[in-house]
Image 1 (cartoon, helix red, strand yellow):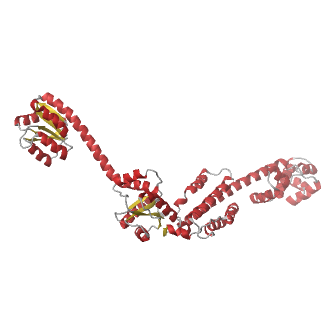
Image 2 (image 1 turned 120 degrees about the vertical axis):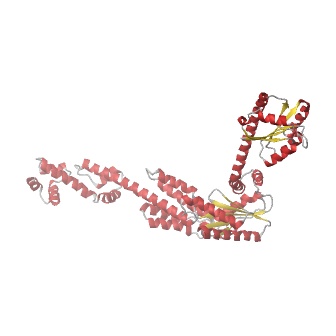
Image 3 (image 1 turned 90 degrees about the vertical axis):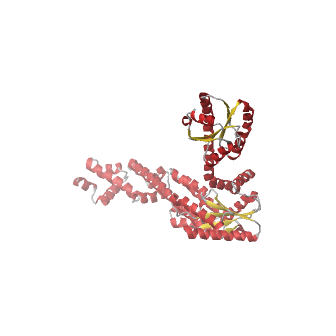
Length: 527
């Protein structure tokens, strides 16, 4: 609903305009009356008014002067001039003063109503636009902290060619990066033991603690990797300011741990003499953060600390050999020792060296996995994700543990595949024996040749999977067939011997008595 103010020094016109139109049907809930421009202005200053209908010629303050003041001080009020034909030129001039429309007097009720319908449509459109703009401004204010962080992230953490564009955006958000020097720090939080439900809460808390320690003169935002970046503005540059920032990070690190019991690894990069050097400063802070892989987490590192790390690359040839061997023989202790040695036998390794070893271990494990058949998609996905996960580990200990788990899973996969494969070999050999037990030349060697494995491998595998050796199994099969023939047929003993793979009937009789405790004839008589 809207409010209307009618300003005219003639009471008859003033009251007539109020009464001849059903203003409520047009959406007006309240109507104010004024007999001159000054009274109208006083009402407007004390009441909310949406639409003003004003005559031009009035005492104390005329309609044009009122329109000029309203256009300057109350630009949202819709002003319509009520004027006679003799004042038409004045009405035309009023358009330049912000007047939306004008109506010529005298005018009938019907004509006035139609004119006001048109004006109210414009008023309604303007009001909707005004509400929309207000809503957008409100949303913008609410989103401003997020937009500020996104802009800072683009300036500091992204290598972009449109740095001037983002600096201009930052300026519009009251982020002044046009002068002074800067220090950039990166904070990496140990959130491994935090549940997913509380993860964002702890990040938010850590950011607030950092802001409380820094004050309003500096900026805190995320870099997109669940790490926090601190942009420290300085009035001067030099070793002293660098040390001040280092000490500030130490204070923030302790405050976060004392408040929410979260360990934090911090890193300080090279100073930046201008906003255009901020990305380079951030990259150097990232490099300094790599010290955590060699010197441990829960510390504050300076880019200068990289000078104390091993310069030459170390490749763990021996450890890789022991790792693969441990997987193949299923020795988990050997797997753990090999992974641990790979990252610690080379001294104080640089972050790049640690990453190289990590990638090499993952690659070697996947290479072993590729030799297997029917490997689950889940373990393949795990392996490929490991390539991308390096930056997320807070310490060498964490990445060692993940590699150990992955290596043990591959060990299980290998053992499962080998077991299944071994059983397939045994099943083929047993089927071969059942089909060829009549052959007196049947042997471990011929069975191994049939199964396409070595004699030694088949001998060990048969014992492992069947609980007996091949010769004993073959003898059991032949003797079972002999006993079946003795029970169900009238075949001679020597005929049964030849039928079941014995080339010497006498040897058959000796073997049968040794196996059953009876001679073939005694066995037949008893049955």
